[in-house]
Image 1 (cartoon, helix red, strand yellow):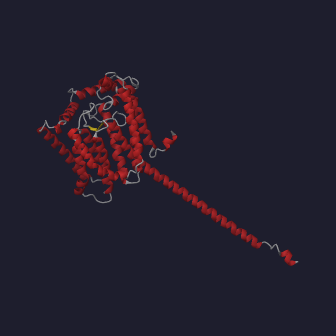
Image 2: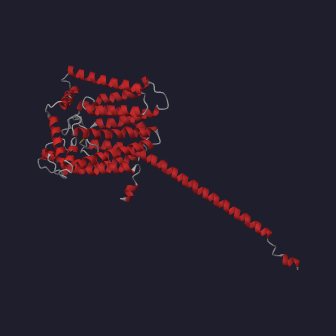
Image 3: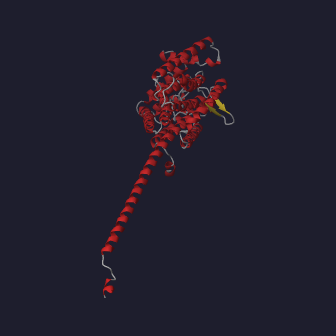
Length: 429
């Protein structure tokens, strides 16, 4: 075990908090999957779902280990070449995507031959954040030309978002807001950011107006769902989402301070998405306010480590990559928690590293692998500087020893010169 931990490079704090979140996830996932077990095969046996989650977590950590060993600067070029692939997969999902396992806010595609469902919007977000960080780090030394940035930066961004928007508004809004934040941190001119945000809002309004004109078109099938969620959030009109929120609030109220205990949740039997979208409500029901605050604290500590890693990164690209990949992860967690306590309308965003689901876990692990790769590079540079200082100190000690030996030799010769000749007695006789 010590040897395995010794092979893990990079920020040990990030490794620790990620491991704690992953280990904790087994208990609520094992408990909250009972609803899926009854629906799936009528037995209520959740062992299969626990083993499936274990496989997702183990493969996720393998992804982190493999990705963190890749020099993070490689992803700078890879992101540019992956964008056309992302567009192709998103277009395929738009045409042939299906709703899977009750994930009513996201389009999925089935990977051939392996039977795994894949949510391409999460992969698109990952590539897009690295692509934006690449552009901002490349243009930092030169004044930004707005017209040229429209072609090199915002055109690829908007193509990606347009392909995600028809099926998943919440993910589109999350990606766009994080990109705006990243460009602001990357010193993209604020007046240009204002123009982009205004253009994005105008396009969204145009999209909704067109959907009113063609309500039966497949591309606009989700618009009514967005409207109803916002409408029901602001009123008391009951619907399916309101049912989930009510059950989540009952679960939170039942948990009180110390919770009902592991596996003793009652509302998990009524919440359709108890192991994914609303798993935070089950956590509070079983582990109480203390458990909920503990999970929140782990995410905030992880955010703190991301800030430190960004500050220590030795390149601008490294700083922006940590922010671009780390902050959305924490922001997504906050959205999931806010939905559970009805601070936001239902969005379909999972709780990173805790909610069940392979795609979400694996994409999060790729992002963590890149972030840890940045911290590993900084660690290697620091270690190299320490080794260089030690070599310089050792060399200086060797030089001082040689000079000292030379001084001793010179002093020895002077003593022999002053001494009397041992043959004098014979010569004098």
